[in-house]
Structures are given as C-alpha cells and as structure tokens.
Figure 1 (cartoon, rainbow, N blue to C red):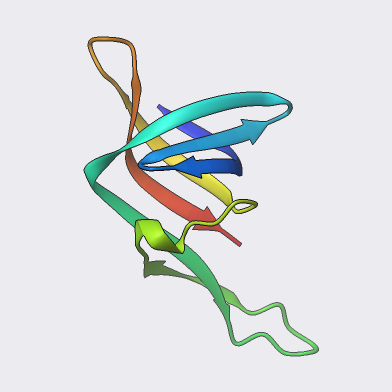
Figure 2: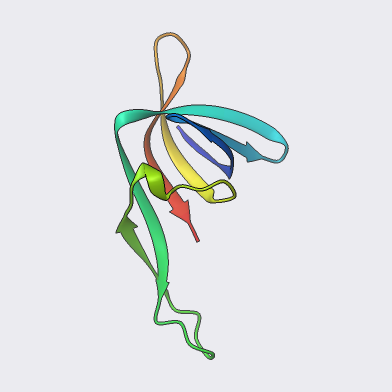
Length: 87
C-alpha cells in the first residue's frame, strides 16, 4: 500500500499527510528508509535530471510532497516502511 500527500504535521515518529482534503496519520517504523529526489544539471534551457538520494527522518518538513510505503499492522494502524520526498 502506498500513500501520497503533502506533509501537514510531524509529531514524534507520526507524520500527517493531506491529499485532497483527507488526512492520514502514519507512524514511521524505527527502521524505515528515507529518500529524496534532487534535480541535477538544471540550466536555463533544460529541466535537469531527478536523482534519488538517501535521506533521514530529520530531512522531512511540513509542506513536503511525499510518497510513503505502508504496512497495515494487525491492530489496523498504518506503519510507514519507507518514505520518498518528491521534488
């Protein structure tokens, strides 16, 4: 399962994302993986190339667009296994 949205709040390991007015709170696992995309080689004439980089939980900010890979725990809670900060 994946979820896409804009980070609305970060509290501890819980990230609230918003997509089309709906909020979803995801608890990121302690061993979750984090990535971000950076645009390299951009000039006035070219858009550049997105390159995936390793990131950390601390790199995530309110307002970031993210994609989170989720796991549904037996108690029904969404747990984040990996997160990508999108450009």
